[in-house]
Image (cartoon, rainbow, N blue to C red; front, side):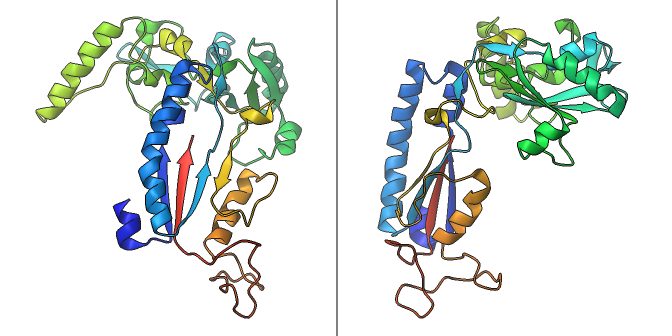
Length: 320
């Protein structure tokens, strides 16, 4: 708020996690979701007041919308059981070996990219994944193209979960051989997103909390520590909210709200958000493709949307 008042930035980005973390933990149908929304309302009040005082345009944007889920789906365990995914062992712990695996999945909520080393294996892997309970769609090259997912870094196959399911990254078959990072809050080493990190281990929450207290004490003393508090399958089974598949109900779609009604439209594609923000900031590309400040209303060449005003300070509030 002080930054907006003191520095009048062209763009301010604010991330508020209230409708992200708790909705993944408890699900959007949970009473905890309503409580999170109330907490968010209280947090946003002063921020919106500061934006109004600075005459800033406010955009509230959600990248995705979270829906209720109850089933974790272990794609990598299936691939391993079929001899397609390989691991290497270190100190009794198993680590995914993507270089020697014939196929492995990188999971992100309700979407998983399956990388298949040999193109000849793609049809068999697609058939295998299609038979896994919880998988709604298996997108091959044509399917990826139809959904705009045919990027060079995309998997040879892209899986989409059923509405009540989501994909884990788990690949070990025995918890005693799980990698060291599996029980840690360690987003950069896991081959996929792990919402179980949002919980103290549901199988032993008391022990997990005591471990967290010891880790924080070591941190305060300047000692090395590990925050080993995450449950494995118990944590995955506790997840109640996820996202990634296209919503069946428009009410479950992401939202974009704007204090300036000028650029209103029925829908905004995710790929159009950047252009919309540039338009609101008066930085839309000019004829000839050169970016620059759009002429203020009343100046020659000005063609602002109806109801729009010339403002350069924009507060963007991202809520997920």
